[in-house]
Amino acid sequence: MKWGIMATGSIAQKFASTVNRMTDEGEILQAVASRTKESAENFARQHRIPEVFDSYKAMAESDSVDVIYIATPNNMHYENVKMCLLAGKHVLCEKPFTTSAAQAQELYALAEEKGLFLMEGFWIRFLPVLQKMQELIKEGKLGEIRYIRSEYGFVAKGDRKVRKFNPQLGGGALLDIGIYNLGFLNMIMGKNPDSFTSDVHMTDVGTDDFSVIHLHYSQENGQGAEAVVTTAIGLDIQRKAAVIGTKGSIYLDDFQKAETMTVSLSDGEEYEIEIPFEINGFEYQIREASNCIREGRTHSGIYTPQMSLQTLSLIDDIRAGWNMKFPFER
Image 1 (cartoon, rainbow, N blue to C red):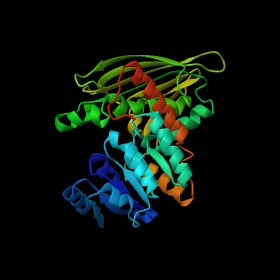
Image 2: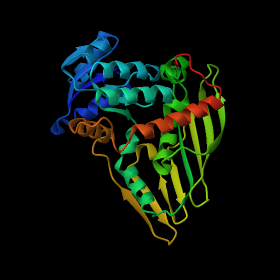
Image 3: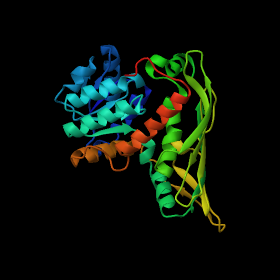
């Protein structure tokens, strides 16, 4: 599969280095586009990419790429994805897919209409350890799920800190990393909560930098499940998670880069499952995208548009409760 990369930031660097280690699987870095030629050329030299574009549109319209990975700022995802689809390109777009569920719904519908593959680059959905976690839950190994917690926080500094909170760029901790917490809950529960409450701290530019969200899920047997997620930019919080059921629990020391998990059962059995990354974790979503395109599918069965839309809808509801409205939203 011939890949084009849109933008040249740190996440694009990670993606490019991963593709370059998958050439034996037929993955090829064909082109890169940036808003400045110098940035694109520097990126191309570093990752041995033959084609350089100083226009996103020019790369989207090029016949030399099959699929485009979009790594532009959050506020640009909607327009960039739409442009690529209209140019006939398959798309893998970095999370958050868009800044609202309405935008995402429109893009998924357009991809179906055009017969093109489209997926949000929510890479943790494809990690083998987390897929194993889903299997154990589905098999009833943990019994009925009663409680979930996940937390994620880091300290951004300098220009990176400014970008993370800029409302014009779709900033804020919830969209940037809170989506990992909420997407993790969706992997377990498969649906949005029936209700939630939250506490949030807002920055002086009107975006969130810290929140604790309590979520309640009803279940068929009448017993509900509770979840608590903590998200912060400005506090260093380990990416720990736990899934607690009536027959056992799963503990992850790093749910966002999960290679191990501990399973602790009520009968006293406890064991660790370890599945190391082949490269760095990005390889699984790249492989899934390529396989789907080769098979003529418009979306992944592992991470469907509906799953993406559920999380984005929940984010919409949470932000609405915080009275957050970004100026770029349609």
